[in-house]
Length: 331
Image (cartoon, rainbow, N blue to C red; front, side, top):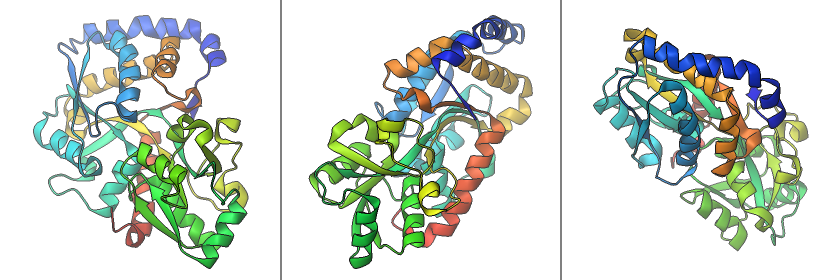
């Protein structure tokens, strides 16, 4: 995994400059792209995916020598956007989709798409890794994991989640398995509502993507991370689930990434190579970190991933989704 910080940028400035200068030249020599690239975003405008897209596209367009035109298609936990992308957009490498691999791949584990196969597209460019976490409202009576486990053995605890088919939801279900605590997941439709549910006491506590929890500040207290705590006291120095309970759960991530029609990559390998090369060059440009932070991103979560990393994560989500499908039937 490649994570970026300012020191890393400084160490690679010279190499980055060489790649940055080369990438647009390669694109022009190949005659691609000759027009703007359309990007489907299967969530609402102004959300986390939108912010990450705008930060990345602001720098990526300087490598490709063209701009990106986003289209927002929220609905059915992301399914609508994928249906539009696969059904209406030409597989010519002038159309991409920018999705949240974790929850959106879990959708397919819950119910396979009707008009296309999950093998008909693939992710090739990961932008971030944002682990899920468990948190309580600052005024909650449940202030430790021991409190939560003890209470969960006495009664069923109501737990807020942004949507049922979410990596953080799977983290919670795995926690219930290993501790014997009883949890009832309640989808609260979006990160802001999920935070509010824990703060107001509407639910006993919540699980959610940690970037949104960090933004909530002192209103919440994080007790457990379903992956690596990359930000330390930004998440109240909460430990990982694997550390505390001896599990081997993969990181339960919200991980935004660009995907492309498989047919486009097969039919236009030169175009796809330019997309890959320029995507990597974007990560090697110090301007990316500045743009990402300016739009509210957590710098420790900015993380390059290519085809192999994305495929491995997608497969893990499909397998975990199949395992926990009976408990996520409200998705």
